[in-house]
Length: 416
Ligand SMILES: Nc1ncnc2c1ncn2[C@@H]1O[C@H](COP(=O)(O)OP(=O)(O)O)[C@@H](O)[C@H]1O
Ligand SMILES: [Mg+2]
Image (cartoon, rainbow, N blue to C red; front, side, top):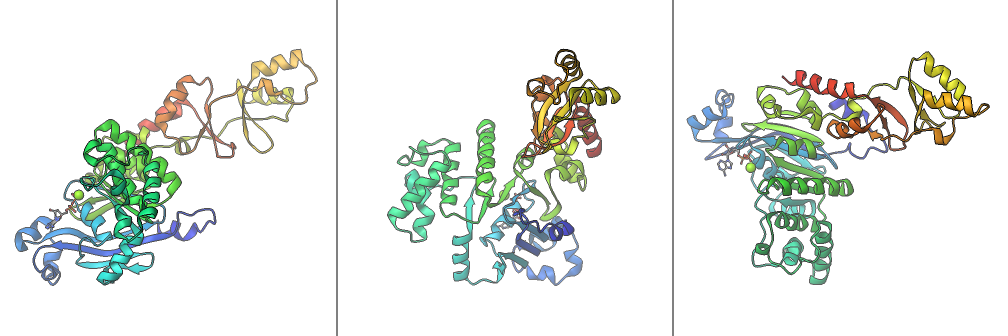
């Protein structure tokens, strides 16, 4: 992980700058938590032991994390593992006991009350599980609430609030009150309120946990789409694995106040760090995690569009294949040509110098980040392997039905 951070100073890679650095962060709830630190033998004990001996509760234990700008960062773990403590510590709704939290180069644990208030307002937006809407205010006033607190004038804050309500799909609902709205819609208002501030960092503590599964999935989809436009740093708490896998760029798994593993969804599912993580990922279907790019193979035979049919057929026969993927000079994928079609061309239209456009069959292609789950229906429809292309349509590899099924069984073996 460290190495990657240093190496990838790519000009077109805007996800690499570390925005939040957490070092040796502790939170101990209870009276006089410092006395726990003075006793190193005690400090080495488990959360339960520390609690029964001192009455102090370990909320966070020696947490070290780096969160990059624009990253969708998930905190996952069982109830009581310290997720809310950590997310609240980031905005200093709770005072931490030890360690540092550096955000945009400033250690927020060292700020005074005024500095902190300024910093919070300019940097953060927060969305809670129970929406936190004010029942006596309209949807518009709820969305504008953060701006009002900031002292923004009525006209300007309503203008901004209307914009963000549109972003979350609530245009037309401005004059309604929260109680008239479904849970999903209330949470949209919560999100609009957080976005109205145009925060750099969005903190979301189990925002979709109260919603029924269908609405929840819809909200997740919308958040994914929104984030692809916003590119904000999002720290998102959940205890739902599929939600974490679907949304997260990085996932930190917490237990008893500690971070036990950090990784991309694929790392977590294929290489769980210990039994606790393994239990979490057991019900994860690899099809929801593995991507086309990670399972694709080399293309065994590439047919060049500028070759004549005879050359193409000769090469195809040599490789004992019945069809080939056709690319142009830019390696852009054009489609598939079959040996049968080449034979027909040679017989019926001798003297062709190139494979004509009409002889190339269009086939469905996918990009690298497409999930294996989404490949199933394509594989069922397809008569050939599925081509994998980049955003410029250049051919990267191919996926056969066998590769799909193999990848699923391999991943299962790896995770057990
Ligand atoms: N205000 C508090 N006072 C004492 N203990 C607390 C307080 N808030 C949280 N805790 C304890 O800290 C631990 C972590 O809690 P929390 O961060 O809320 O976990 P999560 O959000 O993962 O469910 C739990 O053991 C919880 O009981
Ligand atoms: Mg919580």
